[in-house]
Image 1 (cartoon, rainbow, N blue to C red):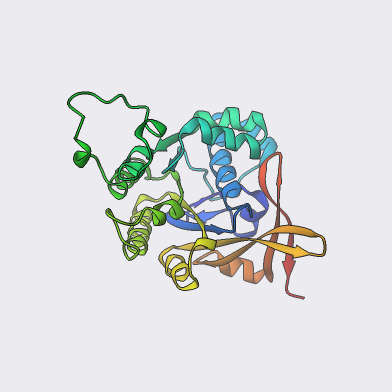
Image 2: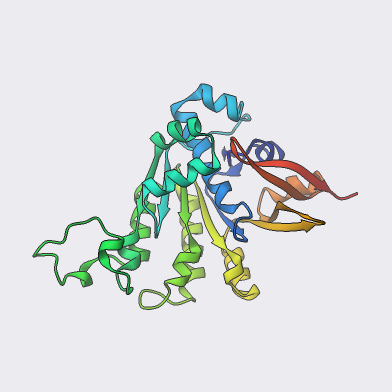
Length: 278
């Protein structure tokens, strides 16, 4: 089975090289606990392998046999444009990684579709110049799910796609979709991802959801990574737990690993230690 690396070497080597091709993984985290940094690092490291092998070897190393980084990376945001996302990546990763990697990352900004029926002034989120023919034509524009579906259908095959974020999509539930549509949409993407043969990462802040609704989303994905803050004395640590992942969780259980302790370094998100059953 072909695998696509997550771009976090210690995690990839633990689970046999990366995610099985055709997977959708939910990156579910508390604010600042590492889910977003994980997504940035995964996108950057996969992109880096195609544009600068020497830099990739320096920061990641050699990929395992049967593992192949995604050839192209697509980053979909509902609220932010490419320059802002690139700047945020620079806060997480070393500048030379960001400079090289973003050559192979295509940013898709769905702000126009996302804010279309909101009270947010149009000139705050859209750089498109309105014309006489476009005035009053809002009803002809794509909905957010339609725009998302078009991008995935065009670009997800054998590639890495990051969706940022499901939290935004949930908060926009209303005219275009209801809550019940969100798990269905995720299940639909999961089904299609198997045929696409790439890797889809979906960001989510689970603090905004009830336990029941969070469970529905976890059940709709192939895999779910849980990012949380853990307090110990006067310090806090970021932790990662693989909550469920068909074909991956068994490898972690074989190593008796119950939790990964994580950190943010020059190469982005990283595993600093593992906690095992003792």
